[in-house]
Length: 137
Image (tube, rainbow, N blue to C red; front, side, top):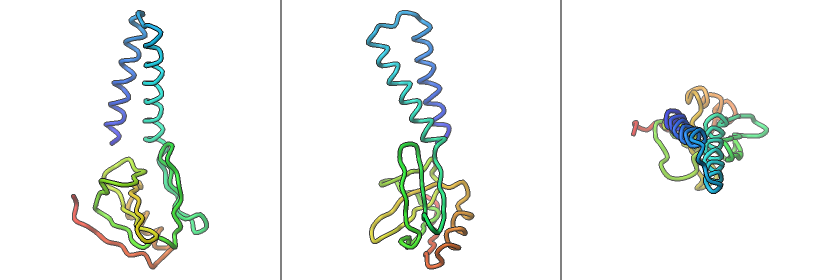
């Protein structure tokens, strides 16, 4: 995922720099260039601004660029390791993450830097969580 984001941003920034150095930019193209720079900024924000925090008081706090939220530790019922959630809420930047099931039907896909350490900390906070390992997809 990092290569895709960094490659896309390099391509978009290259186009902007090429157009600006060319010197023949119309006023309408400036609006497009500002839009492209905004898109580059959001992609960098998503990639470098993704984080997860686990505490008993606040629960699972996640941030992924403009997406942020919180899941109560006591509402988490299951963690699925080794499976990717292709549809749904995904504040994650990689394919090798965890599916967190909480409340009755809610689920979220996250990608902590170390799945095993994250699961260990989660079980310290709530030992009733079921851990399921799926075959890699």
